[in-house]
Length: 375
Image 1 (tube, rainbow, N blue to C red):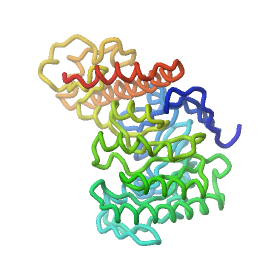
Image 2 (spheres, helix red, strand yellow):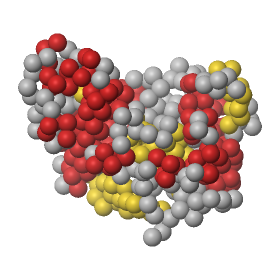
Image 3 (cartoon, rainbow, N blue to C red):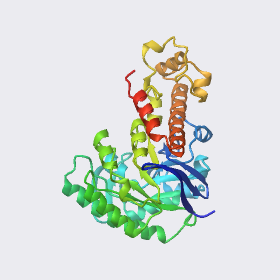
Image 4 (tube, rainbow, N blue to C red):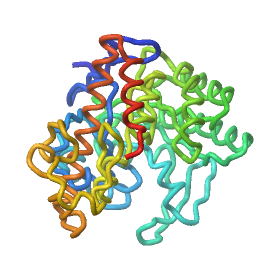
C-alpha cells in the first residue's frame, strides 16, 4: 500500500465522502477522531474506541513530550504499541496547548519558549522539535507547527501569526523530509491560518500549496469566535484548499458544528467534547444533549437514547447511569463516554451515507431541527 492516498467516492454540493488509505488502515471520511491526549481516550479501552466506529484517533504532542516523554515512548516501541492502538494516529503539533496551557510563553522566530503546566520547567517547541517529537511517537499523520491567535486578535496580529505559520510550515516540511523513524509510512498536513479574514486565509492557503502537503487543516477556529462566525469562515476557507486533498477542521466540535462543516467541504474532525461530556454527565442524543444528573432520571427505565445500538444503551437504563454519575462511580464515566463516542460515529456514518446518496441537505435539515430543540 502507498504511504498515503485520498480517494473521493461521492460528492453532494461542497460535501465529499471517501477514503484515506494508509499503511495502518483506511479512514472513512468524513471522519471524527476521538482525542487521546495523553496516550488514552479517557475512560475507554482501545478496543471499545474501535468498536464505536473510530478509524483513527488523535494524540497530543505537547502533553506526550512532557509526560512520559517522546524519547521514552520511542524506546518503548512507539505510541501505537505503548497504548495498544493499531490503527492510524494523528498527532497535533503542540501549538495550541503551548498557547493555552503554558505560562511565561515567549514567541520568537525560532519557536515558542514556555513553562510546563506540570512542573514549571522551561522548554522550547520549534517546528523542528515538533516534527521530531511526532516522529518519535510514530505518528501516522504529522501536523506542521503553527502559531495560533485568539478570536479577539486584531487583523495585524492575525496577519503576523499567519505569515510566521507559513515560515514555520516550510521548516516543518524540511524537517519532515529529512526522514527518520517511520518516515516511510507517515503523512504531513499543513495548517491554514488567518483568523476570520478571507484574504489572509487565501494568502495562507496559497503559500501552503506552494510548499506542498498531503492534507490541509483549517486552523484557528473554535477559539471563541462563535458558531455563526465559524460557519461564515467555512463558507470560503475549504474552497481555498486543494480539492483533491483532505480538509481537516481542528478542534471541532459540537454535533451541529460538524454537520454544518461537512456541508462546507470538511473531511476530518477532532474534539474532546464527547469524552469530556461523558465524564461530566452529559449524553449526546438525536434530540440534543441530555444531563443524566437531573433528578428526573432517577427512576427512568429508558436507555440514554432510545434506539441507540451502543453497549450502554442496550444494557443499562437511565436510572442506573444516573445513580453511577451522581455517586461519582468510575463506571458512570465509562458508560457515558462509550455512548457519546458511538453517537458521534453514528453521526459520521449518517453523513457519509447521505453524501453518497445525494441527500445531505435533507439529512442535515432533519438532524439540525431535531437536535437543536431544547430538552
